[in-house]
Length: 154
Image (cartoon, rainbow, N blue to C red; front, side, top):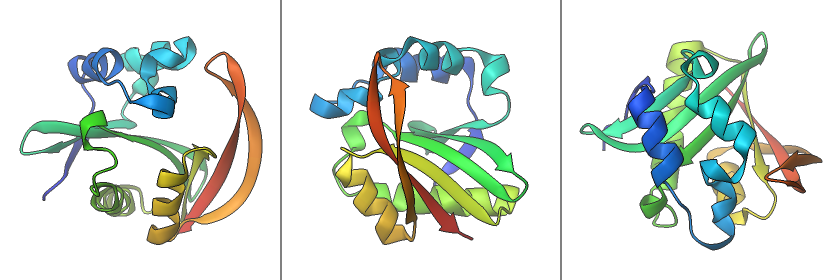
């Protein structure tokens, strides 16, 4: 499959925010689960040119958010369309995202943070080459959750 990355449009942001709903414990990742995150995701000036739609043949399959932490280190957040999760597409989606990041931004390192309950994602990140850095507590979704920060050396 050929993944295409383009700046996320307002229409796409609204579609993701209001229509992508994950099952069970993964509903934690619904955009509507955290009002601050939702507002930020819906504001074009907040997304700027650092949030990308990921499509295959013009079909929206995911998104990728980037932010430079320090020179050479790019932090990312990503999401895959709910009906595609848990079906073995994650590796290809993540590898395509890393390839895009390396060609567009040329970072030395890529970092991400993932809720520690999400062992499915953590296993994938480790298989791709991300290494554990530290765990930390973060307030989100009206509570406090443990997250794992991970790093990928480019």
